Length: 235
Length: 401
Ligand SMILES: Nc1ncnc2c1ncn2[C@@H]1O[C@H](COP(=O)(O)OP(=O)(O)O)[C@@H](O)[C@H]1O
Ligand SMILES: [Mg+2]
Image (cartoon, rainbow over all chains, first blue to last red; front, top):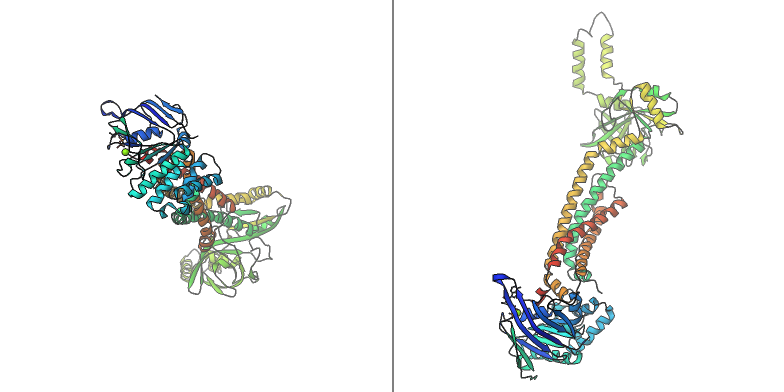
């Protein structure tokens, strides 16, 4: 499942039509290799969220081409019928807020995704347990989300993004609620996991603490992307 | 796969249990209402069963003796007794009135029964205590629902009676306990005037020159005597011999005696279809209103619970949960709420409400099954609004702005 990364070519998105139309994305070109973590940085209203939503198959772009995990999913129109299954199997989401399901314990918050994909409960929980080991939350596996600290919740959310081993992870401000030590830890985890699982990761951020960690950065301004080399230092 | 509905319920069980209890009391009232209706029908049937009659002979063109007043001459039974196929015949009177015990009045259906042996139509078929009436006057057999005790003295109109026997489940179609007294006493009670009225009537009669003729001795006495006797009863109960068709005998009584005759089926139809029909409609209205209120409560609670989970639903959709799964989660919660409500309702109806209702409440298992089915249907329907709200949630909302 993993591998082949993300390829975005000439993607555009227009909200509305006529006088009130907003061109949120004008010409987006991006490429993320398997195992790579890139930063996506831009001022407010520049189109970052719109790009994540288009990649996450929850809004339809206006034109262009998107390839995920080696499969062209959009080319002027969706080439995939079941976008729900696409999201479930190919894309991991990590949000600014962890958005865990409050009535499921930590394990089942994560195991729910493989379960939705038809994987037996025991195996799904086993997968979650392995990730918890790597993310250092194994001791909270049976806790309810409300009993966790912010950092623990965010690590559980990352486990949820990773658990179906998607070729793509989309993270929107994943470190915003964390202090710099925890923020760097999260980025380190994302890098480790990306390498291990050959996942292509896009991290939307304007968190100064983590910007130096990216080897490559995409800047977005008024719906147009520019590539730039980053410092790539992971302390 | 895990049960999302189940986990959510376990997580916020307090909300479900408390709402379920409120709903349960409503359902309990609903079940009791249905039980009251069943009880009334059952009371009517028991009343007919206990009368021991196959045919009811009543005043022409009336629905007597239970649904309308009826009076026929108290010697009509003699002619019926001789008809072919007739086994036993007895006069009967029914009068719902206040029966006094000490300082308190009890509303009862005073029933006048002919002297005879046990098994005489109209007699209570069995007693739970004491004995049947053996004397011609001033003895009574009362239903225990009246609260009367063996040996107690009760007052019907001007006369006192001793309670010699007790029955169970002998009530009128209104649920009033029956009090059996000798027919003669009952006839007197039904038409008896108080002393003043009697004195007045005597005086008037005596003052009427048509009756008080010095030339005709004994006329005034005869007139006064005829005024104070009461040769009427409300109905004649007829038992027929085995092997005879009730309808055939009813037909010949109708033809020869020019009276109205009802068979058991017709009598049941009058009691259930006419006498308690208004109550049944009233109860039916209550059932409809209670169902609507229950539906509104379930719909409101489920809708509120769902609105409180909009963000979780957006996340569930984003990570690939099918609409069907989300709809099922909401419906299951609604059904769970209904099930909690039903259990609470059934228990409260059986243990709390039925015993304290003054009327007989008959909780039929089939009614409970139907009630449960109705609760499930109502819950499923009331979850529709919540489901529509949930399906409208955009998974993009989980990503935010
Ligand atoms: N649903 C929408 N309808 C219309 N315009 C929108 C919608 N969502 C975003 N926009 C507009 O598109 C532009 C890009 O928005 P967004 O992608 O949210 O930017 P960012 O996440 O970088 O702040 C903004 O001008 C915003 O107002
Ligand atoms: Mg944004």
